[in-house]
Length: 242
Image (cartoon, rainbow, N blue to C red; front, side, top):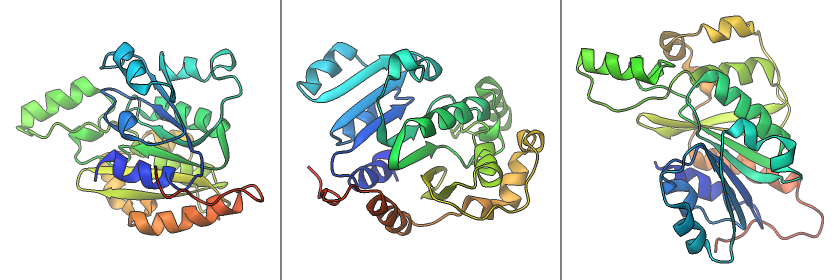
């Protein structure tokens, strides 16, 4: 399942979706997403920005070549708000947590956040250092070029510290994405933040139920209810696509 297979069905729940992507890289997902407004943020885009702007024509598409922390500062983001935010930046718990908290502050009522690479496919893929992940794969003969870092710790932080947010995980094979929307839920026993920061790949596999892995269609059903509950009176329902 590609990113777009998850992102686009969610975007289509909104009549005029405003979309933000953090960590765009080669732009494969960003360029493919159909939305009324699209904003891309990356330290270094791996495509020609002039060509991308020309291809966008008169569409409401914007590119910010800067760290995500800088983008979220008031003088850059201003009053901009989004219906759907996709976080796929640096694959570390610390940075992804900062991106998530910043994203929550600029999410419209009824909005959705998607976080990539929350379930590492191997111990090597779970290391927060990309260089060490490569070195370990080479040493063990693992030819799979997957690196999720320690983003997996974010799932446990959300579960234990953000009871105002519901979430579910979708995906298959080595790639899983976390989908979040604001809705109260019951908070169970919690770890300290320090304990979460020490969780390992083994903890992930032994506590896989924490991810609430579900089919995308089931999550979309929940999101439809969520979006409808926040839709302004008299506005149009979800679009049928462009």
